Each structure stands twice: as structure tokens, then as C-alpha cells.
Length: 290
Picture 1: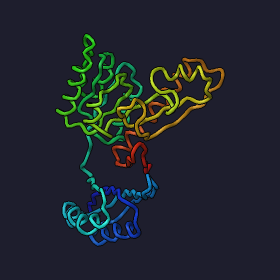
Picture 2: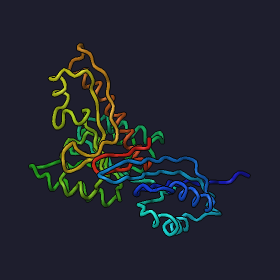
Picture 3: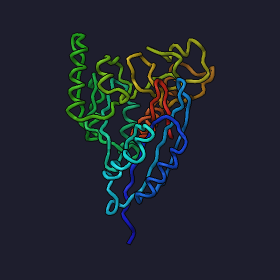
Picture 4: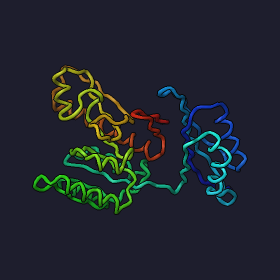
């Protein structure tokens, strides 16, 4: 009879020093686990050398207690190297909320991939400041919350959004073309856990109507950027980008159509990588083990 193995992920950030990889892998071997995937990267950042590592390991839950591994790892390895680290087990499925306005392509791309199992998460709520997407969301059996901005009371509406997120223990907020600027308090509440899709290849054409800006410049590619939302509009750490080529024959309608194709795939990849704990944030940059 084959063993029923479980998997877990170990994420590590620390200053780069000799012996880190050996210390980590030897520890896991001695604790009856089997490493099935490993990524590591060293980089120079502000006069210090940083080390990043992501390991996936298998273990037999009848023989190995992950809680005990965590306690031992801190004492025997992590403390010696000053590591920031975390172990995510199989059952650590994150809860995500999707915020959208009127356009549906990014929202539906996430929902299609979620329904097919490509995106592993719970989606307890979808929130919109418009009601136009409610019928499409209903087919996925996910509660839809219409929270309009009434009489320009944006702050009050945002408080309602945050209350819903907290009541549903949301881990990750996805801005699927949610055409509202979030307040600093909102962003601080979910720092590094809000992913936005910008319909442009940042840092070019920030802000409103990037397609119009691109057309005026006669660009030969149209792109999209998925990034973490920060207080500075469209300036957060970039997770993923991509482009599609244009020709002089492409009018505004064609450019927007092509843009939607790249937006939906870029956002979906960024969300998937975040949920799989493949993204490390370093200041305003990211390390992505994709």
C-alpha cells in the first residue's frame, strides 16, 4: 500500500551567508521530509546581500508533525541565520475577495480558473460599486455585494467594503478593474495583499485612460501590469507584465480588445503565484519564483 504523503512549503528571507542551503536541506532530511522542489536567489539591495528561498517538501503526517518541525527549525536553523520564514501546509487555502466595477473580463478570468481548479483559493465574496455584474457572478454561486457610492460618500462605502472583508477573513484582495482609488487606511490594512491590474505596461502611461495615452504616442505594443497596490497610484511592486504587438492598422477598439486579452492573463498569473507563495517583496520590487 502506497503512503499518503502531504506537502508543505517553506519560505525563507535573510541576509546571505555561507551554508544556508546546506543547513536547511540537512535539517529537512534529518526530520524525515523529502524536498521535491527548491528555488533560491541572492541579490544585492542597499549595501546588503539578501537571500530568498522557497522549498516544497513531502512528509508522512503519521510520522512527521509539522508543528514540531517549525519549533525545531527556529531553534536549530532560523535563529542562527536571522531568518524570516514561514511554513505553509496543504490545508492553508487563502480566502480571496474580488472587487470589480463594470467590466467583466478580468473578474471572469479569475472565476473560470478558480472553477477549473487552476486557482486554489476560497472566494466567499465579490464586491462591486455597480450592479451590472451580478447576474454573471450568480452562475458561480458566490455571494455578490453591491456597494454603490451614494452622494459622493466614498469613505462610507469603503468602510462597508472593509467590514465585509474582515467579516469574511479575507487574505487577498483582487482589484479586477475596480475603478476606484483606495485610501491609505485601506491599503495599510491589507498591505502587500492587494493585487491590482493596470491596463498599461508600467511605468509608462499611469493613471486614467492609458490606452488613449498609448494611441497618442503611436506605441507598437499594448501591455498590462499586475502589481501590489500602494498609497502611490500605480507605483507598487510589480508581479507580472506582458505585451501584445500592434500595427498601424489597429484602431482604438482593436487596441482595447487586445489589451483585455493581456490584462486577464497577466492578472490571473499574478494571483496564482501569490496564492502559491511564489512572490517575495523587497522594497518596491519582487522576487517571483515562477
